[in-house]
Image (cartoon, rainbow, N blue to C red; front, side):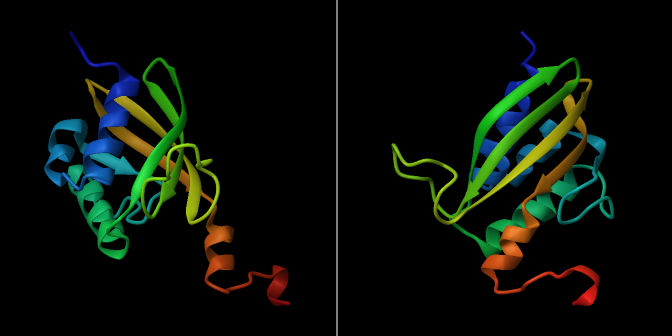
Length: 139
């Protein structure tokens, strides 16, 4: 039986991002996959785009853990709301607290693989944590 679209996206999170099994990208992403909103953007296409991005993130944060908070599927599109942690949160602790970052990823699937994705995340919170204050108009 064909894997559900939501299950496929969950496998990308679990296998590639949480466990660092980069080779899973070859099975789960289309050969011409385009990442429209991540670290690598669409400079690198195909499964290699996710392999490079995940490897960079996991090098910077070896204890990276991404929890899918909510997901919805409509046809060939899966949307997930996620929280990235520097380690799995303890049982009973709200995922949105402490050392975490929230984001949303929208994936379009084609022929049982992810063909495109768009990711947005709270970049202002990251800048704030780094002590960088963004101002309007250079004020």
